[in-house]
Length: 216
Image 1 (tube, rainbow, N blue to C red):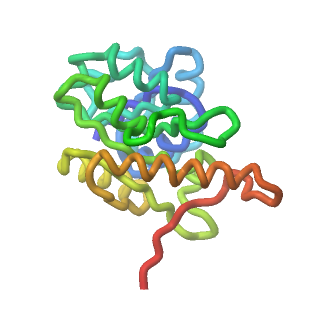
Image 2: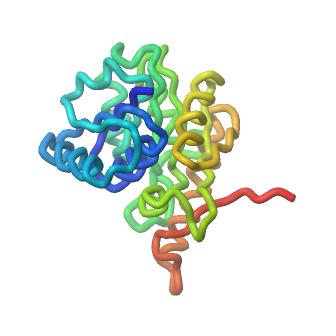
């Protein structure tokens, strides 16, 4: 698949690493074009898999099978609105966690989520999926924690879009967990708020922990 990652930070790096490991074509685009080029060059040099990687301007969105908003919540919402009809028919992945600066609370009102607000800002035919918000960048780069593949929780109202994101996740060596409708992004974002808060407690996990479902 053709994956366009919007953003060039640590989460963009981690998700692109997994997509390349799965053999997908990855294009990085960002507000800072030089940063996008540097990230693409670094990923290419690290040779994470068979997939090609490059940097481009935002026209890369038009040719993508999956567009990943690897930016903070407010920026993601603005991008969903500004791209407008160009996102119709696209699988649009929101990875954000709408938390305050102290990692003590969500900044969205009860009964909604960042993903649902991004879906409302996007055009009606964009297929918004919540994914990767419960995984930290360092663990994504490795693909595992202590030899255990990461779980990636996926929520969205379009079943085919969820399957496509699950295929991306699985191909990169991770375990997709389909939780159903987009409204369940509320629980995923609350879940990750606690996960993030635990990192700053005494004896925290150094941003290298993961949330895992284990069944007998």
